[in-house]
Image 1 (cartoon, rainbow, N blue to C red):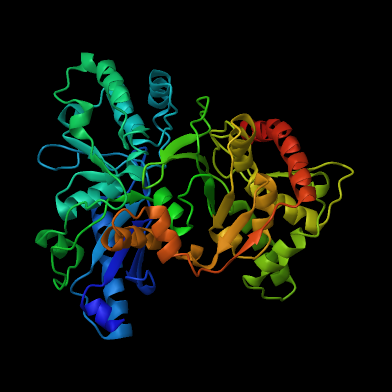
Image 2: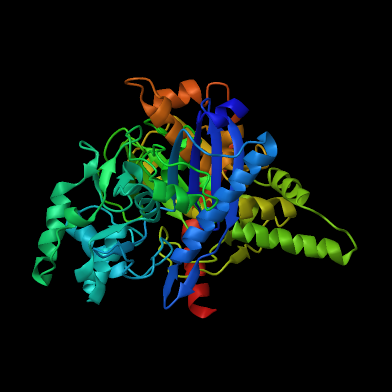
Length: 526
């Protein structure tokens, strides 16, 4: 391993998550060498969720320096070169720059819900769902608002695209990340030119000195070369000055794409569900959807295949709140209980009634666009003759973590007849084996796999994409590369859908849908 590090037979992936920046260094066999990390938080300033440029660069440099320190401590090697590098970040958002390369307005992240008018009008214009967090929605909303900076825009991109540009000089994006900026034409793997023309026509009366194609990144697919780390970029990444320039970079990708890679779910009719603070499902489509659905995002894999995405804001926060209440109750009796309580309660949930025994809960800490809520109120309610016990309480709390997701997935599975051969689960909710994995299998009526490597996350997926660019054979597609070089010997577990569980979850979701009126009343009254 020491020789591989010295001679650059390595790949580095760095991903900017919402609360943590993570770096993963792997060898040419995609085995983990070292990790680095940096915690950060977005800020709400002047009505906008944002991260400052100082936070971005300070966080990146701290994350990288911790990776370097880990390599030095473990292998007694000073990191001077790397075989290939890739950057990833939270998809979407808006970073706009003038000709001098100056940021025109603070970075507007995916978390902002300030573009409803633009998203609605663009969806109607394109006949294609444009969510509020997409970059083009932010640009168009700025136009509708008459914001002064728009006339000076020379380039706009995402966070991953910005980092890549600053370190290489290349204004490019991977197609998966690009698909969260503006719709992609799956036949060309490029931005949809007909929609670009429609956009330009719609804003022609504003008299801006730019056309859309002039100010958006170029689109690349996984495996393409996306420039090299400049000498200046190396100094900016590694403040110690030891890292040398000239390192090849792969196309920057979004966290959705790296999640697909990290779970080996880039093939058609496969998908993955990421379940943590929020939850989202991504299904690689074998055919286009028949209709436009505001609940469904259409993005792509890192190689440009169409993906249907159901993204929900709420998942585990309400579970954590209840578990902390149980911990506090135990403390009243002098008992100190650690995180093992999660496994105990999760397994207890499996003893409950399949339909939760007349209990209902909503985990809405924030709004949920899939079910039509701008705000949320965590809520628990039960029927008078319900089977009220700890097993059913925990079961409904886990079921409702997938409630909004199931609502969106039913559009795909039942209305659009989307076929799924396998689903890969990853994220903290799947830590206790065989519980949420079994529940998700029931919700989707499809087998759900959880692999041991899934916990490595998106930074590892980004490192694999960098490795793929460097090490792939001629004509070797990403799907084949992952099967042969990354997941061939990976262990995991598979839960098949139990017919009784499927029936029970279907009964639950019917009551969940009817009970949304209760949640609506709570939002309006409390």
